[in-house]
Image 1: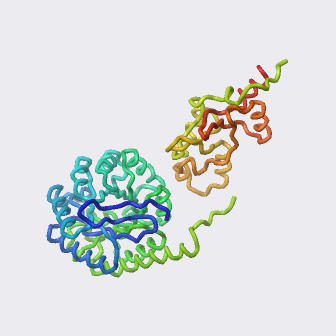
Image 2: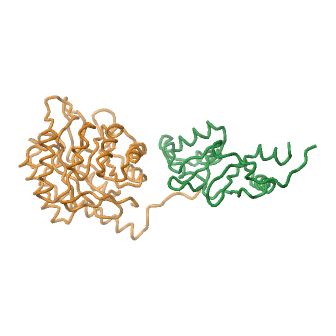
Image 3: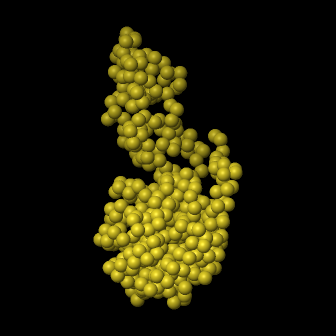
Length: 293
Length: 138
């Protein structure tokens, strides 16, 4: 894919380049920061897997889950404690870190710590959030809303550009298919790549069944491998998957996070698919099958 | 009876830049169509977003041809950048070209408008109606 390359990582960590014909990048970690020790444990385990696979990666964990269906659900550690933990993770492991933010007033503080700032899918067209994200001067990870068409994501990208951002990663995390159900339209990758920015597949939220369990979301994680292989074959620059060592007891997204015991095998397949796709395109040329009119 | 005037240049008769649709290359197709409708002119001149250079035109004819071959959902089409559908090899004239020769080009190509371009930059639009009036000296 002829996309821009964006660099994730400021001083103190190994920068990760996402885009062009570069290697597939993994973005992952727990859905929510559960504790400092838990974040460190997962960062260490993911880091070892990615080192073994020679796969660049970004640690992801959120400090505030503002989109929970129930007021009783775990909301997060909060801004100050969460950012401190993320800062410690990047210092300890030398890995870029990312979190989303759900309130424009959290943008500046979040941008001071994270290497990649994430805009939640539900808020992907909110001007105040996009302005705050661009204002951090960090690369922006923009998730396609489940209600958005891939071509309409250009409007959000243009907003970011208007606010001074020139480094964007666009992610598909599924599209509403009626109620409580998501589907993936893999045409969204080449369509969103028409913006010129790299694209990413969210393999764990895509199998979510939104709020299907009354007041929390369900999920069919058995389909993660299939969707990840398909997305990598279609053409992505990064793969996002949340993981946990004990999914049933995860404090957030317990029904969708990937058990970390399966992370290596999924990443291995995604990486192989990605490299095979690049080899095929090098052999056969770009995918131009337009009819001549 | 009117007298044919052959000493008038295309630049002298062209519509000024602020009186016809001129859009940046990344203008959404929907916005370009709105501008053409607002100006009641069936052509939009497309210029570079970075240096203002003239890049091409998008016309009512381009729209008709595009609709006949388009397979995208209409909302996707309307979200396309106008440059994706613009004619980048369109005929242009220079401001110093004679009006008579420019009208001859319009006749030969059966077109109503000619962008007037100088050193790669759009300086005006020659529209058939005022052009004929000047040629005839009316």
